[in-house]
Length: 354
Image (tube, rainbow, N blue to C red):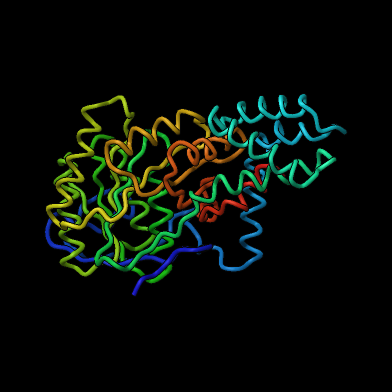
C-alpha cells in the first residue's frame, strides 16, 4: 500500500543488520552498542506534533506571509499606482529581479502576465497583481509534488546540503513527523566530518525515540551501508541518511557523496529511494546553483527550502521552476517543528504577494 504526504506528513517503511546502532544519549554522549531504544525524555523546546487542522494550516500560512514580507513588499508596491503601462512592467521587472526570481523566470512571468492582462481586459493595477499571482502559481505548479512512501521497505532517504542550510535540523523535524505517524525510523549519522553533527543528530534521535547508527570518525559510506543494512534487518520503515555539509566546489567531498550513494546501493539495490537537497532560502540565486550542482552529482528527487523568513529572497523558487524544476517537498520559515510544512504553489504565490 502506498502512503502519501499532503498538507501533513505520512511516511514509509524499512529493515536492517549490523554496525553501531545507538540510543541517543540523554546528557553526555555515551555510545551504547545495542539496538535498544531508550524512552524519550523530551529536551527543552522539543518538537510538537504536526499541525492537523485548517486553523493550524492557516497559522502556518500567516508565518509564511510574515517570512516573505520583505520579498513581497518590493513587488506589491509596484501595483500602488493608477495606470497599467510600460513603466509598471519595468518596475515589476526590477522588483522580480531583486527578489532573485532570475532573468529567465522574470522574462517568462512578464510575457505571461501581459498575455493575461490582455485576455482579462484588466484596467486596474490591483487586477494585474491578482493575475501575477496566477502566473506565479502556474510557474511553480511543477514543483508541487506529493512525496509517495510505502512502495519500498525500507524507504531510504539521503539528505545533502551545504553547511548552514539547516540540513540536520530538517532531518530532525522529518523524523519527528514520521515518528508521530507511527513509523519506525533509523537515522544514519554519516556526517562524520563535522565534530558536532553526530551529537546534534543524537539529540533529535533522543527526542523522537528512534535509533541512530553512528561511528566515531568513521567512513561516511560505511556508516550509510551499516544503517541501511540495519534498517532492513530490524524491519524499520525509514532510514534517513545525514551526509556532510559541503559546497559544490569542494569536488573531493562531492565525490564522497557519489561514493555514499554507490555504497548504499550495495546494501539495497533500489536505494536511495529519495535524494533530497536542503537549501537556504536566503541565498537567492546561489541556491539555484546548488540545485544544479547537486543534481548533476546525485540526481536529486526533491528539495527542502529552509529559512524563508525576514531576509529571504523567495523568488528563487521561480528561478528553480524555470531552470531546474525539481519538486519542493517542504518549505520552512523557522526553527520550530511547525515551521516546516508541505509546499503548495498557490499558497506560496499568494503569500509572496500578500
